[in-house]
Amino acid sequence: MVGELAAIVGAVIIAVFAYGLNVADPALVAVTILAGFFGTNIDSLIGALYENKHLIGNAGTNFLATLLSGIFAMAVYYLLISF
Image 1 (tube, rainbow, N blue to C red):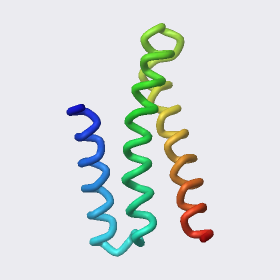
Image 2: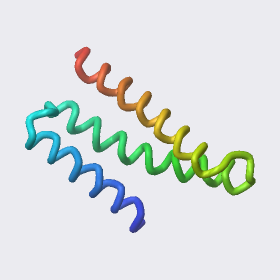
Image 3: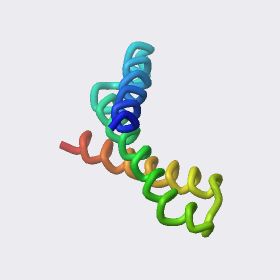
């Protein structure tokens, strides 16, 4: 639970700074928070399924988690601005 809370707090801090610097609209703020939370959890999942079994290394875990989180963020943002 502490890690989940830290992930959300970290994502909120980044989103608030982006909004405060006028580089993110409210939809992007929401997407930033969701993608941060998603990224943290997908990183843990990939780490547990593949890295702990020595199928990929830490760099591979980070790459896949970042890639999937970016795709997730783009898809959610596109859906939010489409409506």
